[in-house]
Amino acid sequence: MFNQPDRVVQEYVPGKEVTLIHLIANPAIDVIKALEYNSEGNAIGLITISPGEAAIIAADLATKSGAVKVEKLDIGNGSVVLKGDVSSVEYALQQVRETLALVMKFAVCPITCT
Image 1: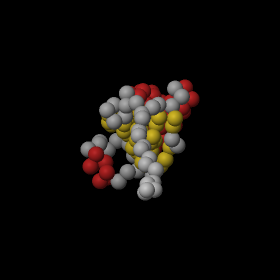
Image 2: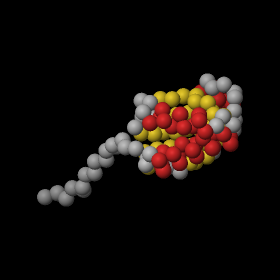
Image 3: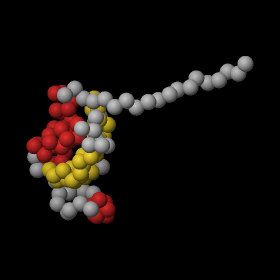
């Protein structure tokens, strides 16, 4: 008889969660050009959320919180890309995180920054 190690099957089941909230302050011009974004603002905000349709809610919350523009919204992947000045994008990300966590009871990750 062979002793075989236990087999672990991992499965991703989307729930109400935010898996990435990131602020890129002063991105390199090459990054901006590669993304084909305009040069307005000096920060990019990234949000990844499930279910994907909740990206619409995140984008709405972000734009209502201040002077940020939605550069990309992908409900298939649950991603939102924001653009604006550093303080506006940071504030928008904080508002999205707080509303989704406290009001809508999403599991949320911390905001990271580079």
